[in-house]
Length: 361
Image (tube, rainbow, N blue to C red; front, side, top):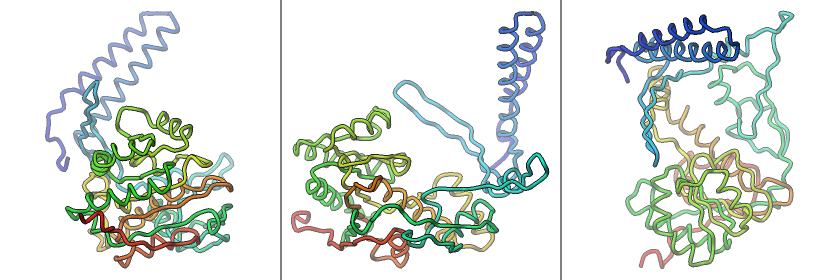
């Protein structure tokens, strides 16, 4: 939605009329629960009128607007969306420069396992460059930074397997040559595998080719998007001990599977975000307008952060063991590939070739 007022907004006035009617109705009753409920509904209709008007007129400067449609088995959902392109100035005004009750500046602590885009994490470090990307995004370049060492012994607990030789992920033969490698590592691990995808399209293609073969091994196959909720899939994976889970975006982060249930994480593609989403497209356009490089300033740092999140699914306790397998050859063939590896803690790295003789038959 690049132009304002492309439709005549007749709905906001009607919503305001409903809100007014509810307020008048509230004045006719002395029943306190009814008054409370009517007041709540009136406020919701009034807020909806304001939000709809802002979306149609595009009155929020520095924001991107779009229409989003989704479909489930039960219904079709349409949403009008408005999101600020740059949240940094908002955070600075309302959080970083906010003052407390006594007029003193507030102390704000931002913490996460994946805020830094570089630097080994075995020891504590105050290297500000590692946080340059997130500080720029949040408009807090003057913040004090500290990267703490990991409590895990990755040299002993984990292994990174880098597979080269597969075609570029955009190559039309990529999926056909990718599937045998995924199956090979699933078979070697005998289950206990997360396969983390960057799109449902690739997930479905792999599931279609490998689903029967995985089940023939006697392994439970769990596929995100087949109807079961994420929490249900996770519970089944934890209790099975030898399951294979094919997941997308929500399984890259916020997932904790400790013990032998998860022994291998497979990453078929480096997690670059496709720049066809309105917010991402707007961010990249903004970088271009000021003469910057959208790939180096946005796409690459964001992909590194997500890569670290996916890697972090493997080792969740001091007793965990396993390997992370990267099947995207760009981590070897592209100059930026080294940055993904350098963002991880020190650990053993194995290099393997991607195309086996059987894959070429």
